[in-house]
Length: 264
Image 1 (cartoon, rainbow, N blue to C red):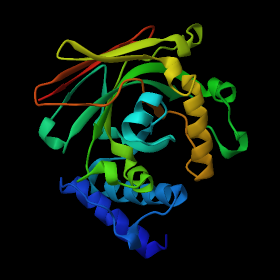
Image 2 (cartoon, rainbow, N blue to C red):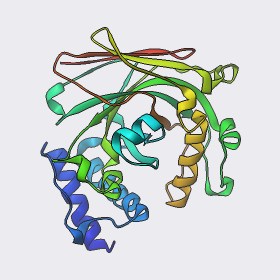
Image 3 (cartoon, rainbow, N blue to C red):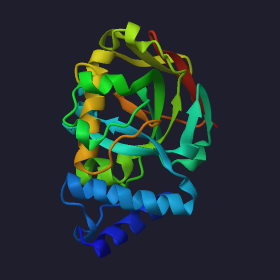
């Protein structure tokens, strides 16, 4: 994308969030044509949102790393987005339902990094990213459907807009995670006390750290390498659930504990 198209597209995407309005397709002139342009536009959007008061990204999320989510969204490949500091809660979170256009929740395993994952270490595998993982956590990802019809959207534009990302609740960090078999951890999500889905860590690309390796390599490819201190949501083991005002969401993942969110 040339600089003019990039900035015009970033203005449109940031305007949707800042003005709390649904967006339709970007016009052909301003639409990213591939993943490289998608992540380039994501960066331009970040700059505009940060200046407008969103703060800085403190973490990242990956969508479509599990079969359940690939089938639900009809997207076969992982897609990454950014998570902004003001949208992050710990252990239990309270959110203003009216601040979203169509809010949903997902049940995830997340990691926090103790070290950078620079280009010099690529290509990464789950074994070479493992030493950089300081802690593993359960987490609720908050997503927002900001589109008139997301099912008709092209994947590149969805990536540019942080792939539905809208916030999160992080569970307590488990520093002794190496004692766990992450692929065998079982997790579930309930809404208002009723279980709405469950899954296991191995649903995430066979092993949760496979998703982290994918992101580390993708981030290097697009010159946005992962950095120490960032957290990463690795993908939902439960299909997205859309909420109503007053809903209380709880997740529990064996070995990692629980987290909750209330939407008022």
